Each structure stands twice: as structure tokens, then as C-alpha cells.
Length: 231
Image (tube, rainbow, N blue to C red):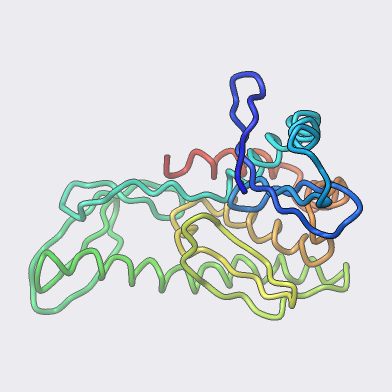
């Protein structure tokens, strides 16, 4: 069942699941959903009281995950429109020709297409190709750096994720959102380091934060940049 509490000016929605357990637990998912698991005899009043006590922590966790939520505005894929690549803005220039291509030239991304309707697919394919190359080049020295912790990802794969920039599977596979190619290099490094830290600490505990800070002292600066990136 779902319910909500008011905490100051903030409404905290939560999903409640009863189960055969002894204590009440609260988790915040990467999609910023608040999940409460409670013993079968727990009253709603007691659940809400616990959420109020934990509200500052819940809000902090939700804000932490916010940096992993791409905010892509609608694009029309027409000449003159601005598009990001590695944190820089470029103007789109579309021309019609039978030989299709996408090239970066000065302050422009030049897209040559057989038909204007092809511009979006061509540009997205170009982003994906560059993401594959760049992400592996950026990740390689960071993976080497983490070998001192006796960890290494099983693989790095790209996958469209509407609500996250990156994730790490229990088997050590790091998944990156190709949209990250639009962010500055520091933001990409931050997401990769964040996921590499998850190979050691699976939850966002203080130990996790300490390790992330040790491996990237200015991670908060890049996290903030990422939060504002495609707003």
C-alpha cells in the first residue's frame, strides 16, 4: 500500500509492505522511491512516526540519487539547435545529401542526412559510438587505480536508463548511460568512480562516501554539475 507524510514543506510518499520480520526497515531506491518494510502487527501511526524521525536521512538520500536522474529536454533536431558533447555546447547544422555523416567542426555538429527525419537517428548513433570509445578510455586508468583495493569490474556496458546515470550489478558489471557522453569528463569520471566504489561497498554508507572522497576529492563539484547538466 502507498501513503505519505508531511515534513515541513515536503511531502514524503512511501510504499509499505508488511512481512514476517522483527523490525521496521526503510530504504530509498535509486529511483527515489521510499520503501518501508514492517512487521505484520505494526500500526500505520508507528510507521509514519518512524518516517518522520528518518525524514532528514530520506531527503538526503533522495537528493543523493537526484544526480543519477538525467533531465533531457525535448529536442527537435533542427539546424541552429544546441546539443551537448563532453560538457560543451555545439550548434546543429543539418544538410541533405545521399552520403550520410556526422562530424564535429568548430562550434558545430554537422549532420548530413538523406532526409531531415534521419537527423535524430544519425546523431544518436554518433553519440553512442563516441560514448563507447570515450567511456572505456576514461574508465581504463580508474579501473587500474582501483586494483589496489583488489576489485575490478567484470565488464562495462552501455544501456539507456531513463532514471539513472550508472549502476553496478551484484556480479560486478558496471552499466553506464550513453547520455553521459554529453557531460564533461569530470562528471563521467565521477559516475565511474561512484560505481567502482560499489564494488567494495554496496550501500551508500559513510565508508562508501569516505572511499569516494579518497579516490576523488572534488566529487561533490562534479555531482552538482551533473545535477544541473541537462536541466
